[in-house]
Structure formats: structure tokens, C-alpha cells
Image 1 (tube, rainbow, N blue to C red):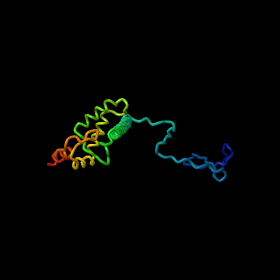
Image 2 (cartoon, rainbow, N blue to C red):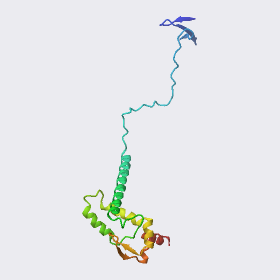
Image 3 (cartoon, helix red, strand yellow):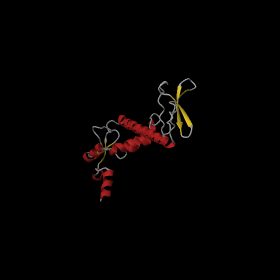
Image 4 (cartoon, helix red, strand yellow):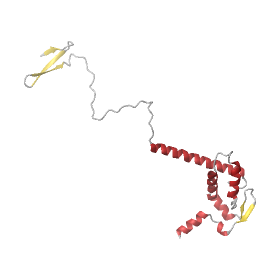
Length: 178
């Protein structure tokens, strides 16, 4: 039993339960149809436009800001160390480390206060660079082997006492272990 559809294609008629009819196109005479789309239960993923920029959250902005500030601080401490090495090469020499005199910090601060307008770092950066210098292993070795401390100009200052030959951090560690 074939009928003709609206566009002239042959239609097959199927009788389904109690006189209900269903008409389907005849596959033998029709043109091939494209395959049906697959249906999934997953929601469709919408593509975001490329020009849309993700706005960072407050916490992400805080992390970015802190990282930038840390990097800037490290750069300024490095510049302060370079300034000390250039200003006093006989005292701040990596190959021939000497123990610093007890008043060297105050002397450096006096020189810094006269030049601070031309420098790109603050006194805290200089003091941090100085603290790093005296915590270095080469400085500890120089404390053990040297007989005197030295001034900014490279001349001998006071004599090293026996209790000064070990850095303070080592003394603190020994007290904590006992």
C-alpha cells in the first residue's frame, strides 16, 4: 500500500493497533537523508568569545601584587649590595672576605644618608644586604681565621675576641639544642 506525499515521494503506510495509521517515506525511492544528530544528556558547552578576558578575583590580585612586591624588594636589595661593593671594594670582596668592624653599619648609614636622593633603594634594603653579607658562610669562615675586624676604608679596627669568632646564629642554635 503506497501513497504519494506532498512533494511527490512515495509513502509507506503502516497500521498500528486499532485503525491508527502511520505514514513513513519509502526509503527505496527517496534520496538518502543525512544522519540524525546524536542526543546527549550533557549540557552544551558554550564557547566564550575570544575577546572576553577573565577577570582575576581579589585573592588572585593579592597574590600577583605580593609576588611583584617581593620581586621589587629583592631587586633593590641586590642594588644595595652592588652599591656597597662598588663603594667599598676592599671591604666587600667576595674572594677576600673580611670581618666588618662593629661601627661599620653606622658608617654605611652616614654615607647612605648623604647619597640617598641619588640611589634607587632605601635604608632597609641596605641593612638587609648587610645582614645577608654577614650571614654568608664565607663571612663565618673569615671570622674564624682573621685576627682583626676592618673599617670601611680597609684599615684594621678592633681585635676579634674569642667569643666573637662564632656567628650569633650558631651560638643561638647551640643554646637551643642544649
